[in-house]
Amino acid sequence: MNPRVRLYAAAALLVLLAACSTPAPKPSPSPPVGMPPPQPAATPAPGAENGPSPVPPAAPTLWSHMRERFAMPGCDADPQIVFWAQRYTRHPRRFEGYLRSVAPTIAYIDRVAQAHDVPSEFSLLPWVESRYRAYPPHGGRPAGMWQIMPITARAMGLPIKRDYDGRLDRTRTADAVMQLLRNYDQRWHDWRLVDMAYNAGEYRIRRLHAAGPAPEQPTVPDLAVTRTTREHLLKLLAIACVIREPQRFDVHLPGMPASQELQEVQLPQPVLLQDIARIAGISDRRVRALNGAYLHGRMPLDGPWSVLLPSAAAQRVRDALTADALPRQPTTYTVVAGDSLWEIAHRHGVSVQRLRELNHLRGRVLKPGQVLLIDRPN
Image (cartoon, rainbow, N blue to C red):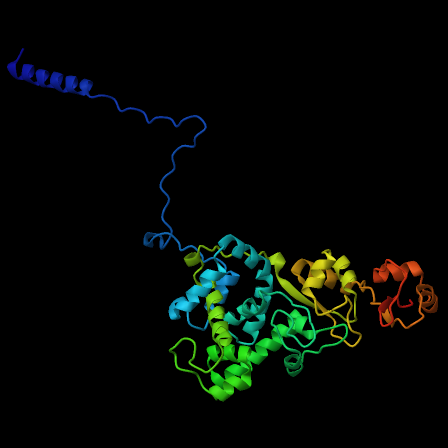
């Protein structure tokens, strides 16, 4: 064989052997049974390179909304503020439970305060006055959760009648108090002096500080007032301090479901509270507690005619109004000497049994001056 041909043949053989020694490519593995095949990476959305989308802020709670509207000094403005705050919260779980029970009332008052442009600290004023207890009237003493004297009630336009005491009317009293506080602020432009005027009386504070704000220091303005008046302001700042910094006192502020929100329902006529309770679907005791101004469970014939109820119950009463299904309130009769149940029933065309049921009577004895409810004729 020609030497050159032999050389070309050897080279070709080496190339063929090298090709045979290269391993074949492996097939791609199949995905496990039940699993989808891998997908190509998604194209990032515009702006995603700047990080994850921001989480929308949580809806404001009653307490956070109040904090935004606080206008007076905070926890550390005076050592006595923390002192009183610690006294209020010395049993944190008990404090939380009580705060939960009065939260609907606080929320309602705070809405009224905001309508009058009064800071949220004053939604807590009944905490200092009464712990939100609606004290009943007794002679010339203060009454209601705001502890209003009879003479002050008349000046505020809150009537006091046989069947109705405006100091226990949660809607009208809240409105009247906030209007009073706003009037005080127009004189002093200092909410600390406004609180002191509420406790000590406007004219006493006017004698001590005629108009305009007091110096920022001390926190409790240096006026010749009683210890009670000074502590009144400190206590108000203290309960606001707990709302500002609950964790400082090992307190978890309770939530308030929307169903507990209190709403006022205006009525076209007087209605017995027991009938309101039946239509609203809540207990008579609850209705009376929220509407304690109607001292005997009935509304005065000359008004006012309205009720304060939780939102769901309020809607049921509105539905009854729309359907013209609210029963009329019976008339009243005042017992005189010599009256008997049979005579009163016969005179008004009702049964003795109905008189007993309507007035929750057990025995037969009536007292002169006793007021009985009498069904109106259809």
